[in-house]
Image (cartoon, rainbow over all chains, first blue to last red; front, side, top):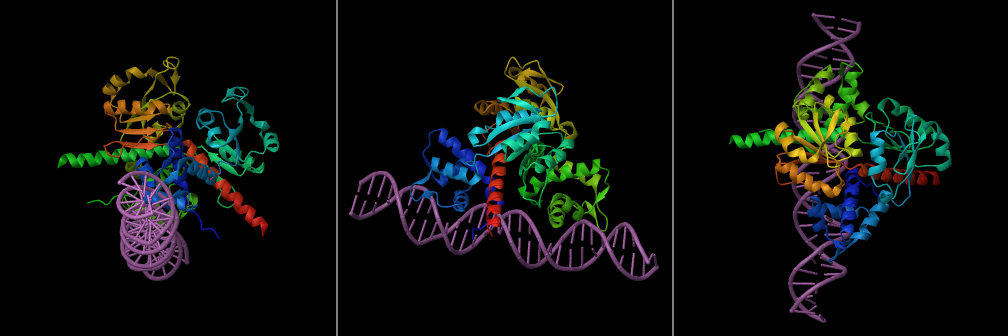
Length: 218
Length: 218
DNA sequence: AAATTCCTGTTAAAATTATAACATATCAAA
DNA sequence: TTTGATATGTTATAATTTTAACAGGAATTT
């Protein structure tokens, strides 16, 4: 019986993956938990603890082989599964996602972009021709993508999600303002909110200003 | 002496804010921690605990006044400070941010968009004319924005950040692939990584598939 | 007006998460 | 070889975070 991996650990994995990718690209062959901890501003202990949830990838006296560790994390994250995705909505957000996130280098494959706007249909985005959303059902049936990226207006989101679910999609990356949640069923969702980041930054800035005010009053 | 608010609480505040905004827009006047907990899929206890970090906003036997609570959270998050921001980079990500995140309704004001690409300079995005990045120094001096949104290629990011810091900016929302970190100085940073969300989704999907395989083998 | 229900703020307990400590294996150098 | 320095995997401890419990104030009902 495997013990469950906590969300705290899972949430850190993509960050490990990014840093290891950087290291690999810069030609670093090996790294110790201490060195990595300095780069990432976390404790070496946490890194070792995290990695050991999945197995011993390091070697005493040597550290971790960057390429090997990166590959292991890729496996854990499912990046070697060759998952395919369709993108619904070719507005700003959709285009950003299609062009920015280096799908292929992360092991994903974007296989179709859909929109309802007749002005957009037929346009080229990231080497894909935007398709008519009305064809999405037959497209899914034919190509069986595992994920749908929702970059549609909030009013449309729930309807689109329902349709995707009816067509058999079980994983959603949702960029719409409204949260998508499906606790009960075998459906997985990640909601992304750009404005949350902005609000967090705002909080930090305010705190920082308060702190400096107090300090300068001494 | 005020006790420090934990990051776990801070990270939840934007989500509270969004849900309260939704409630307000749907005309809900009051809500209890239990009702809100059902909407948000967290425990009522946590909601009460979180809110009490900042003061007693509710009333026994009544619950919380939606508008009042939303305003209080806005204050806590610094949304009432009238912070202004400039956006560096008018590529896909920059345009998404400029058009999508409802700056104004969140109390922020975007006051300038900059790019180095002469083809983009002069174009209109979200009611702003894209300015020449070479003018950013004098612009900052004149308008004193508090935040910079970095939506530039990863190779340019650190240089841009250094320049912004030299011009006096102290808060950064960074969308570049490369992380920006400034532990030491009085500078606050939020890094956003779209691909992290995708990787987390991938992990969840893989786990879900494993689970179902095991279940169906019974 | 009394009784009952509701629901907060707060304290206490449980659970989780992060950090520290250490035994031991590997590497590198003398 | 032998010795010392590294650095992991793992166990133990500390800190944090979440959940539960409850006293009592406010609203609502009878």
